[in-house]
Length: 184
Image 1 (cartoon, rainbow, N blue to C red):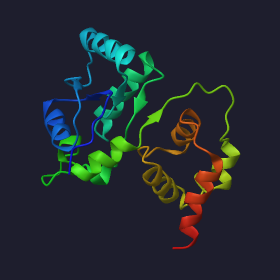
Image 2 (image 1 turned 60 degrees about the vertical axis):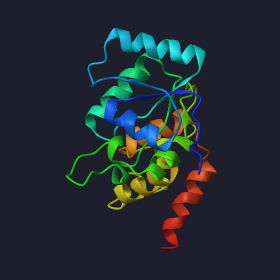
Image 3 (image 1 turned 90 degrees about the vertical axis):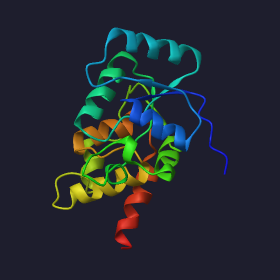
Image 4 (image 1 turned 90 degrees about the horizontal axis):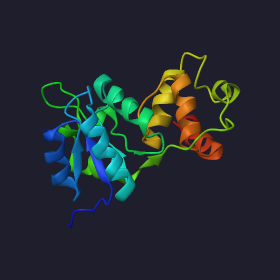
């Protein structure tokens, strides 16, 4: 099978991530080399965004979230891809893109989200409560199911509501995914 081509530049944490990505897809990367992103890397991201586009694809751990948030702060309209934590586990306990299967990387990069400026919240706190995503003993389980199915990375109730609005995810789609749990 021929490797899928990613036209945007993919932003990863390090060279092991680049190596693993190049086994799964044909793409160019920018490596942040850790969570203390310097000005040169930010300038590189700015050039990539203005010429080809860019996708943030960091590890599903605390440093990865920190890097993602730092980049999002400067470039709020950048695209994002998420790797589920359970698909990023290494044999020796590490978490990261470099440990993911080729299939998981391809799947994550095929489901890219773009941040949209939120002028009015479509998903409200009341929606989150009504869907059982906050305020119940099963809320964490329900959020994990929804986040996994949407491939947006796990989040607490407040952060999930922000993500759902930022990515402009349709309420009917959310409800349909949560209905799957009733059938189990």
